[in-house]
Image (cartoon, rainbow over all chains, first blue to last red; front, side, top):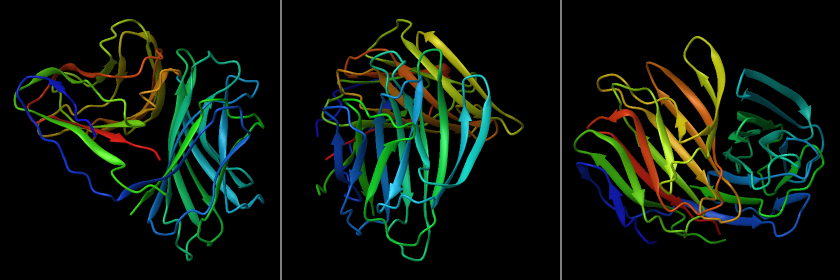
Length: 188
Length: 163
């Protein structure tokens, strides 16, 4: 990789670092057209944790919308989530049990200014373990220069199966717009 | 599956003397996301701010969620000249724990979003999302102190490469 060519500050000492290979890119989807869901299948079981880095916007007719996650094609109410949310004026908390689509990321939607996208980093812990229910956490949100949210989500899938596939959709039934991307990484 | 140098350190800076700002320039566009890890102290201030590509226009905004040990609050800045965040270390020997994720930084189609978690143990913890209303690829990042970053403050920039 090309190193930084210039670092400007007074009194600097620094170094370049030889990276390891304990954080691998498994798969990435970048949408060229509006699409309802994004899926990762045949996820290798050779990592300890998974991370999804999501950059998204929805066609939902609103100022913002939320993405949900489902594992292994399970669409029943086998999930729950909690959230800690900053709206720009107040902080609040909420959650739902026995849901079919637990939230992972909030992002702009159809009535938002064009070019605004939201982002989320979702960590799925010990996903290959067959003795634990699967849990995740997310830092995510979007700022729209006068609106938007900063959110922390956590959630669970009440199933001890190893996670072999992941589906991401829009909670309000919208599509993800062009340029939405989801990247799946494995952490050893 | 592409395994390899997915998470790469791009540059590392340790301040030998106090500095009002640190700039990473000539950032290659070959990564997908940037991660900036900051362990910093500013004994005269309690915030820090990002500017991208030397843009000093009022093109930045931020929504934050903050806990100070007593209450959780949220606040917003709009049309600001920089992307301002809390917290930074403020007292002797106390440095911040700050990780900023700058998402999809090299695309030339969308505005840029940063997710920032920052804590200063005696003061509080925060989760923020910032927006830079520009479709330009980010090629430089300036981190401005509220007043001045102390000696020993560290700034590490990483690149994440998607498959």
